[in-house]
Image 1 (tube, one colour):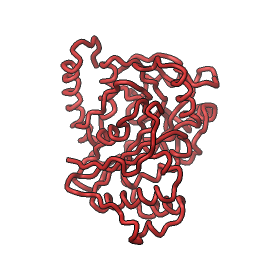
Image 2 (cartoon, helix red, strand yellow):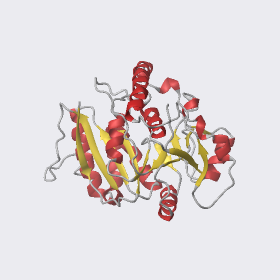
Image 3 (cartoon, one colour):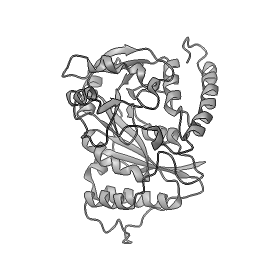
Length: 338
């Protein structure tokens, strides 16, 4: 159903590094500049282009970003996915297109802001499904340790450095999913840099657990009340163990034989839940980190989703039941179920 172009932008990545892996439609690539400010390590992004025009825009944009943004060129790998009936056109640097006339990284992002038309979630305006799990797999492909997030989330300051130091000091994390607590913030607020700033906003209701208004059980096992009351520490480390519970869908860092995301899940519903479920059955344990966190830009509200959300959710709910039955055959010796 889809055609992928690996390495639209390429960068040299240390296989032992922690990679921030994300995915986006072309319109949401504006968030990359914020991610590069907060995440000091390598970043891998899979871009989905739903139309031929978007596929062409993505290739021209990749060329412009590579030409004018040193951080993008040094630290970002970019992959492109589009419907199989389309082919991406590689830009000819000798032909002066609209992006070829730009002279700085800021000009590239300013131009992207003018041509982008952000939609509502996965409402693409086409008969093409947004393949979120395919994009996630492509973004984390080849990584040892990866943190897979949505492109409109921002990590806490210094999270990459803290993870590198912790992982470099020990090799005991092979079967552990290191959970990074996720929050959401009112759009008018400035993104908190550290835990102290985040907790202050949390206590006055300007920050709340991720998906609080849509699916409280999807994040509840993280135990936010326990996390915000942990004593302040200078070093990043696992603070407490959390047993997996359905329908938990934590954001986490893990290495080793991490199961891939099941690419049958598209659009909305159960795409991350299913992968966390398989992590549990495969023998991974979940430990919540003490200091690092993620913040989603804006509160998630039901009215902000596209009209087909519930139908997609019901379709994927049925698929999830089948998926859990398949895990019994895939892991016949595992005592765990979900």
